Amino acid sequence: MKDFSKYQTQELHAKDLKHNMHPFTDFATFKEEGSLIMAESEGAYVYDTEGNKYLDGIAGLWCVNIGYANEEMGEAMAEQTRRIPYYSSFGHLTTPPAVELSEKLVSLAPSNLNHVFYGTGGSMSNDTAVRMIHFYFNRLGKKDKKQIITRTDGYHGSTYLAMSLTGVEYDHIGFDLAPDLVHRVSAPNVYRRPDGMTEAEFCDFLVDELEQKILAIGPERVAAFFAEPIAGAGGVLVPPAGYHKRIADVCKKYEVFLVSDEVVTAFGRLGEMFSSESVFGFQPDIITCAKGLTSGYIPLSANLISDEIYDVISVPQAKGAMFTHGFTYSGHPVSCAVGLKNIEIMERMDLCNHVKKVGKYFENQLKEKISSLPIVGDVRGSHFMMCVENVANKETKELLPAEAEIGNRIAAKCEEAGVLIRPLAHKNIMSPPLILNVQEVDTIVETLHKGICDVQDELI
Ligand code: PLP
Image (cartoon, rainbow, N blue to C red; front, top):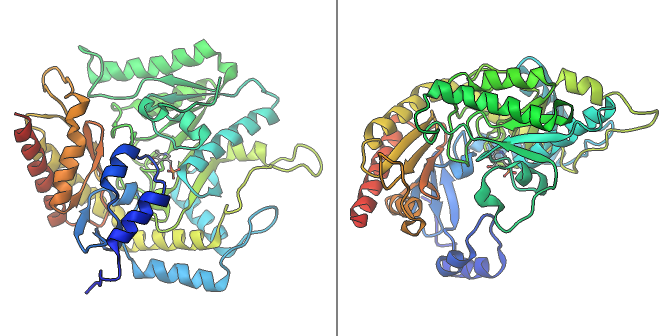
């Protein structure tokens, strides 16, 4: 039995309000409502300080792929901490876990990606990709080839540079972006594609739009295109069939590096360790990943880099010159030991095949049970990465007014019923731990169904 008496919820709330500044928070409602303070966990479940149990339909934040409170992960962390808890990777230094994890990641990644660079989060990983690509073109003397293209509603993180890459306009409000660097093309939003366009025509449009954008900027000035295989935080946007392969061809044609942001999609969420090649059939020049790499147990991100890029940036500029990029915690031994253990557990549990079956069941159940509800415009996603888009009018796809707070209200109903589902403006997002069984999938689907129906009734 878990003991929750040790948690002083009121005191924690007071301290939290006073000193703990939360990321991505609405300070007004935060000050009124305070936080839900999570204290314990097991498997696919988390508990708040008062002992309320929740089935976590969002795996923390697309993170906890192998589920919570795994003893082996704790052991791996403790063992590495006892051996050597930290050493730098700068220069010629490293530690055994960093070396072993690099070899393991390369064995799982597309065959052209043979080099690994570590950071501590997805944003850092995307920043690193930009710096490496710029360095690459500098080394080749192509000093003007620096511009980056990203997509509306793509999410790439929250550092200054990663947020400049991010195309979710809501996230830019009130902040500045890096000047003169990032250009945008359309989101591959099949549901909201222009009226009268088939999915295939929409794909043609997106591919052509990217090519025209490169030509307009000038191919000699465009360095990279960033895309998530399925855009997550922008609303789980599954692109039209064939999109990624054709985008990759356009990039190749103009010597534009393709960075596949797999911060969410790697490590099993779509039933493969990496989805770029295995699910979508394209070879990126860099994969950025984080989250599921350690199932969120400890911060770690990795850039998987092509031979083509490595072979240029690894040649010193001059005798004694260095590649001056890196972080104190690059290749952190405890993080890497946890990453290795996480992958070992995933492989032993055959989690990717589990996702292929149970994730597909989740996808099908959501589509079957939720799509027909009057306020549901779209149910989309793949395997354990799903989204419900709520609307005022199914025909016109018109949205409910923002004051209806539809996503928040549905998520609140689900939370009351013991299931966590993420609100994202008018949408609700699900990305559960990959260990979910069929009964737990049914619980999420039934709870969401009831939550939507209850809110629907309140709207009438
Ligand atoms: N890229 C994608 C696709 C993400 O979903 C996220 C975070 O959700 C990031 C990058 C940024 O990762 P982090 O928050 O670890 O910096």
